[in-house]
Image (cartoon, rainbow, N blue to C red):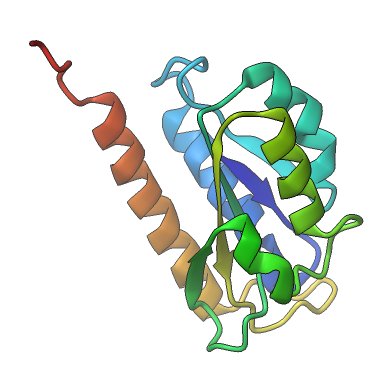
Length: 155
């Protein structure tokens, strides 16, 4: 999982908050060769080398995304679908990063965008986005736990 965003710009912190929540929950509970959290902050491309060394089968990128809905609403998209969604706080457009990762790592990539209410400098995260962060984090914890606690398929 790659969290993206800025803790200094209001709701843009959403991706970083989800990554921090997952990191805190799974610290010492899962083998890092099976699941890892990467904090990409405002330059997620800086995590590309580490992601390439890790060679995951799946990458979920969580970020703030303005897709014209109410604050806190979420969208799950493929990299091909994000070219029209502004991910505004990054040095490099997110679709450039996903194109690069797709070419370098044989994996499935999805982007989970959370609609911001404000991206004002030094503004706190708004209540609807904080609620979305908590919901997304809880759902990801449940899904990840389910994957890794599943009994082996014996045939």
